[in-house]
Length: 284
Image: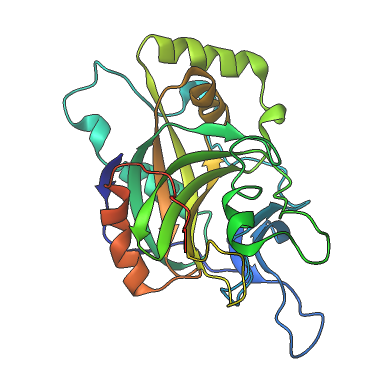
Protein backbone atom coordinates (compact mmCIF):
# COMPACT_ATOMS: atom_id res chain seq x y z
CA UNK A 1 0.00 0.00 0.00
CA UNK A 2 1.24 3.48 -0.87
CA UNK A 3 0.96 5.79 2.15
CA UNK A 4 2.73 8.94 0.95
CA UNK A 5 4.65 9.92 -2.19
CA UNK A 6 6.87 12.92 -1.57
CA UNK A 7 8.16 15.58 -3.94
CA UNK A 8 11.57 15.21 -5.65
CA UNK A 9 14.33 16.92 -3.70
CA UNK A 10 18.09 17.25 -3.59
CA UNK A 11 19.70 15.04 -0.98
CA UNK A 12 23.10 13.59 -0.30
CA UNK A 13 26.70 14.64 0.18
CA UNK A 14 29.62 15.01 -2.25
CA UNK A 15 30.42 11.71 -3.93
CA UNK A 16 33.87 11.65 -2.34
CA UNK A 17 32.35 11.52 1.16
CA UNK A 18 29.18 9.46 0.49
CA UNK A 19 29.21 6.00 2.03
CA UNK A 20 27.02 4.61 -0.77
CA UNK A 21 27.24 5.36 -4.46
CA UNK A 22 25.70 4.24 -7.73
CA UNK A 23 28.53 4.19 -10.22
CA UNK A 24 30.37 2.40 -13.01
CA UNK A 25 33.28 0.09 -12.30
CA UNK A 26 36.55 0.58 -14.11
CA UNK A 27 36.22 -0.46 -17.74
CA UNK A 28 37.96 -3.62 -18.88
CA UNK A 29 38.07 -2.29 -22.44
CA UNK A 30 38.00 1.30 -23.66
CA UNK A 31 34.90 0.87 -25.80
CA UNK A 32 32.98 -1.35 -23.37
CA UNK A 33 31.26 0.10 -20.30
CA UNK A 34 32.15 -1.18 -16.84
CA UNK A 35 29.65 -2.93 -14.61
CA UNK A 36 26.95 -0.77 -13.08
CA UNK A 37 27.29 -1.16 -9.31
CA UNK A 38 26.14 0.05 -5.91
CA UNK A 39 29.23 0.62 -3.78
CA UNK A 40 29.61 0.76 0.00
CA UNK A 41 32.61 2.70 1.29
CA UNK A 42 34.11 2.44 -2.19
CA UNK A 43 33.75 -1.35 -2.50
CA UNK A 44 31.31 -2.93 -5.03
CA UNK A 45 28.37 -4.23 -2.98
CA UNK A 46 25.80 -5.07 -5.70
CA UNK A 47 26.03 -5.52 -9.43
CA UNK A 48 22.98 -3.90 -11.03
CA UNK A 49 21.16 -4.30 -14.35
CA UNK A 50 23.49 -3.64 -17.26
CA UNK A 51 23.39 -0.22 -18.94
CA UNK A 52 21.94 -1.44 -22.26
CA UNK A 53 18.39 -1.88 -20.91
CA UNK A 54 17.92 -5.04 -23.00
CA UNK A 55 19.78 -7.28 -20.54
CA UNK A 56 17.87 -8.92 -17.66
CA UNK A 57 17.01 -7.05 -14.48
CA UNK A 58 19.69 -7.69 -11.86
CA UNK A 59 20.73 -7.10 -8.27
CA UNK A 60 23.65 -9.43 -7.50
CA UNK A 61 25.32 -9.27 -4.11
CA UNK A 62 29.10 -8.80 -4.19
CA UNK A 63 31.86 -8.93 -1.57
CA UNK A 64 31.38 -5.29 -0.54
CA UNK A 65 27.92 -5.95 0.94
CA UNK A 66 28.90 -6.77 4.52
CA UNK A 67 27.09 -4.28 6.78
CA UNK A 68 23.83 -2.53 7.57
CA UNK A 69 23.36 1.18 8.26
CA UNK A 70 21.37 1.27 11.47
CA UNK A 71 22.28 4.46 13.33
CA UNK A 72 20.80 3.19 16.57
CA UNK A 73 20.05 -0.22 18.03
CA UNK A 74 17.11 -1.97 16.40
CA UNK A 75 15.45 -2.18 19.79
CA UNK A 76 15.16 1.61 19.66
CA UNK A 77 14.55 2.02 15.94
CA UNK A 78 11.29 3.55 14.71
CA UNK A 79 8.10 1.61 15.21
CA UNK A 80 4.49 2.50 14.61
CA UNK A 81 2.17 1.42 17.41
CA UNK A 82 -1.64 1.25 17.16
CA UNK A 83 -1.91 3.73 20.04
CA UNK A 84 0.00 6.46 18.19
CA UNK A 85 -1.88 9.75 17.63
CA UNK A 86 -4.09 9.60 14.57
CA UNK A 87 -2.16 10.24 11.37
CA UNK A 88 1.33 10.31 12.85
CA UNK A 89 2.13 6.87 11.51
CA UNK A 90 1.15 7.91 7.98
CA UNK A 91 3.66 10.67 7.28
CA UNK A 92 7.20 10.64 5.95
CA UNK A 93 9.66 11.12 8.84
CA UNK A 94 11.82 14.06 7.76
CA UNK A 95 14.44 13.29 10.41
CA UNK A 96 14.94 9.83 8.89
CA UNK A 97 15.11 11.33 5.39
CA UNK A 98 17.90 13.67 6.49
CA UNK A 99 19.73 11.01 8.51
CA UNK A 100 19.87 8.40 5.77
CA UNK A 101 20.15 10.96 2.98
CA UNK A 102 23.54 11.86 4.46
CA UNK A 103 24.81 8.40 3.45
CA UNK A 104 24.03 8.96 -0.23
CA UNK A 105 25.71 10.79 -3.10
CA UNK A 106 24.28 14.14 -4.13
CA UNK A 107 21.32 13.70 -6.42
CA UNK A 108 17.56 13.92 -6.83
CA UNK A 109 15.53 11.61 -4.60
CA UNK A 110 11.85 11.07 -3.88
CA UNK A 111 10.94 10.04 -0.32
CA UNK A 112 8.21 7.38 -0.44
CA UNK A 113 6.40 5.77 2.47
CA UNK A 114 4.95 2.30 1.84
CA UNK A 115 3.28 -0.42 3.81
CA UNK A 116 4.65 -3.76 2.58
CA UNK A 117 4.11 -7.40 3.49
CA UNK A 118 7.43 -9.02 2.60
CA UNK A 119 7.78 -12.60 1.38
CA UNK A 120 11.25 -14.11 1.76
CA UNK A 121 12.53 -15.77 -1.41
CA UNK A 122 15.56 -18.04 -1.73
CA UNK A 123 17.13 -18.07 -5.22
CA UNK A 124 16.26 -21.18 -7.19
CA UNK A 125 13.28 -22.02 -5.00
CA UNK A 126 9.55 -21.34 -5.23
CA UNK A 127 8.70 -17.75 -6.04
CA UNK A 128 12.16 -16.79 -7.31
CA UNK A 129 11.76 -14.04 -9.91
CA UNK A 130 15.07 -14.93 -11.55
CA UNK A 131 14.10 -18.58 -12.08
CA UNK A 132 10.50 -17.91 -13.09
CA UNK A 133 9.39 -14.62 -14.65
CA UNK A 134 12.82 -13.61 -15.88
CA UNK A 135 13.56 -16.95 -17.56
CA UNK A 136 10.15 -16.83 -19.26
CA UNK A 137 11.21 -13.59 -20.95
CA UNK A 138 14.99 -13.81 -21.45
CA UNK A 139 15.65 -17.52 -21.08
CA UNK A 140 18.69 -18.76 -19.15
CA UNK A 141 22.12 -17.16 -19.35
CA UNK A 142 23.66 -18.24 -22.68
CA UNK A 143 27.12 -18.82 -21.21
CA UNK A 144 26.24 -20.54 -17.93
CA UNK A 145 23.05 -22.23 -19.10
CA UNK A 146 21.44 -21.15 -15.82
CA UNK A 147 19.14 -18.35 -14.57
CA UNK A 148 20.66 -15.16 -13.21
CA UNK A 149 21.69 -15.66 -9.59
CA UNK A 150 21.46 -12.79 -7.05
CA UNK A 151 23.75 -14.41 -4.44
CA UNK A 152 21.33 -13.48 -1.64
CA UNK A 153 17.85 -14.28 -0.38
CA UNK A 154 15.56 -11.29 -0.95
CA UNK A 155 11.97 -10.19 -0.34
CA UNK A 156 9.15 -9.82 -2.82
CA UNK A 157 6.50 -7.31 -1.79
CA UNK A 158 4.29 -6.26 -4.71
CA UNK A 159 3.59 -6.61 -8.41
CA UNK A 160 0.98 -5.32 -10.81
CA UNK A 161 0.49 -4.86 -14.58
CA UNK A 162 1.78 -1.63 -16.10
CA UNK A 163 -0.05 -2.07 -19.40
CA UNK A 164 -0.33 -4.71 -22.11
CA UNK A 165 3.44 -4.62 -22.68
CA UNK A 166 4.82 -4.19 -19.15
CA UNK A 167 4.67 -5.54 -15.61
CA UNK A 168 5.84 -3.96 -12.36
CA UNK A 169 7.85 -5.95 -9.77
CA UNK A 170 8.99 -4.74 -6.35
CA UNK A 171 11.85 -6.21 -4.31
CA UNK A 172 13.50 -5.48 -0.97
CA UNK A 173 17.15 -6.56 -0.99
CA UNK A 174 19.00 -6.88 2.34
CA UNK A 175 22.53 -5.52 2.58
CA UNK A 176 23.42 -8.65 4.56
CA UNK A 177 21.58 -11.97 4.11
CA UNK A 178 18.89 -12.98 6.60
CA UNK A 179 20.97 -15.88 8.04
CA UNK A 180 23.28 -13.16 9.47
CA UNK A 181 20.40 -11.77 11.57
CA UNK A 182 20.29 -12.45 15.31
CA UNK A 183 17.62 -15.08 15.94
CA UNK A 184 16.60 -13.67 19.31
CA UNK A 185 16.02 -10.21 17.90
CA UNK A 186 13.94 -11.54 14.99
CA UNK A 187 11.80 -13.49 17.48
CA UNK A 188 11.33 -10.36 19.60
CA UNK A 189 9.93 -8.51 16.60
CA UNK A 190 7.65 -11.43 15.71
CA UNK A 191 6.25 -11.29 19.24
CA UNK A 192 5.77 -7.50 19.09
CA UNK A 193 4.01 -7.75 15.75
CA UNK A 194 1.66 -10.29 17.28
CA UNK A 195 0.61 -7.52 19.70
CA UNK A 196 -0.08 -5.12 16.82
CA UNK A 197 3.19 -3.19 16.58
CA UNK A 198 4.11 -2.11 13.06
CA UNK A 199 7.88 -1.57 12.73
CA UNK A 200 9.60 0.64 10.19
CA UNK A 201 12.55 0.17 7.84
CA UNK A 202 14.57 2.42 5.51
CA UNK A 203 15.94 1.77 2.02
CA UNK A 204 17.53 3.50 -0.96
CA UNK A 205 15.81 2.48 -4.18
CA UNK A 206 16.17 2.39 -7.95
CA UNK A 207 13.78 1.81 -10.83
CA UNK A 208 15.17 -0.25 -13.72
CA UNK A 209 12.98 -0.79 -16.78
CA UNK A 210 14.37 -3.63 -18.89
CA UNK A 211 13.05 -5.10 -22.14
CA UNK A 212 14.76 -7.85 -24.14
CA UNK A 213 15.83 -7.44 -27.72
CA UNK A 214 13.86 -9.27 -30.40
CA UNK A 215 14.21 -13.02 -30.66
CA UNK A 216 13.63 -13.71 -26.97
CA UNK A 217 11.29 -16.42 -25.59
CA UNK A 218 7.55 -16.02 -26.13
CA UNK A 219 6.63 -13.94 -23.05
CA UNK A 220 8.15 -10.66 -24.25
CA UNK A 221 7.36 -7.53 -22.21
CA UNK A 222 9.04 -4.74 -20.23
CA UNK A 223 10.03 -5.60 -16.68
CA UNK A 224 9.72 -2.63 -14.32
CA UNK A 225 11.88 -3.46 -11.30
CA UNK A 226 11.62 -1.22 -8.22
CA UNK A 227 14.45 -2.45 -6.00
CA UNK A 228 14.76 -1.27 -2.40
CA UNK A 229 18.26 -1.79 -0.96
CA UNK A 230 17.63 -2.15 2.76
CA UNK A 231 19.70 0.18 4.94
CA UNK A 232 17.96 -0.25 8.30
CA UNK A 233 15.44 -2.88 9.40
CA UNK A 234 16.97 -6.26 8.53
CA UNK A 235 15.59 -8.02 11.62
CA UNK A 236 12.20 -6.32 11.17
CA UNK A 237 11.81 -7.43 7.54
CA UNK A 238 12.62 -11.03 8.37
CA UNK A 239 10.22 -10.94 11.32
CA UNK A 240 7.44 -9.52 9.13
CA UNK A 241 8.02 -12.25 6.54
CA UNK A 242 7.94 -14.88 9.29
CA UNK A 243 4.78 -13.51 10.91
CA UNK A 244 2.99 -12.52 7.70
CA UNK A 245 2.63 -8.96 8.99
CA UNK A 246 3.20 -5.52 7.38
CA UNK A 247 6.05 -3.10 7.94
CA UNK A 248 6.41 0.56 7.03
CA UNK A 249 9.16 1.13 4.46
CA UNK A 250 10.66 4.58 3.94
CA UNK A 251 12.23 4.53 0.48
CA UNK A 252 14.60 7.18 -0.85
CA UNK A 253 14.09 6.66 -4.57
CA UNK A 254 17.22 7.71 -6.49
CA UNK A 255 15.88 9.22 -9.71
CA UNK A 256 19.36 9.68 -11.19
CA UNK A 257 20.53 6.11 -10.56
CA UNK A 258 18.06 3.82 -12.32
CA UNK A 259 17.51 2.69 -15.91
CA UNK A 260 14.40 4.84 -16.21
CA UNK A 261 13.40 8.40 -17.00
CA UNK A 262 10.83 11.06 -16.13
CA UNK A 263 7.96 9.33 -17.92
CA UNK A 264 8.45 6.12 -15.95
CA UNK A 265 8.96 8.04 -12.69
CA UNK A 266 5.69 9.91 -13.22
CA UNK A 267 3.79 6.62 -13.51
CA UNK A 268 5.14 5.08 -10.31
CA UNK A 269 2.67 6.59 -7.79
CA UNK A 270 -0.28 5.38 -9.83
CA UNK A 271 1.21 1.91 -10.27
CA UNK A 272 1.89 1.58 -6.56
CA UNK A 273 -1.78 2.31 -5.72
CA UNK A 274 -3.14 -0.42 -7.99
CA UNK A 275 -4.29 -3.79 -6.66
CA UNK A 276 -1.64 -6.47 -6.53
CA UNK A 277 -1.85 -8.82 -9.51
CA UNK A 278 0.40 -11.54 -10.92
CA UNK A 279 1.69 -11.53 -14.45
CA UNK A 280 -0.55 -13.34 -16.95
CA UNK A 281 1.85 -14.79 -19.57
CA UNK A 282 1.28 -13.93 -23.21
CA UNK A 283 -0.46 -16.60 -25.31
CA UNK A 284 0.60 -15.10 -28.65
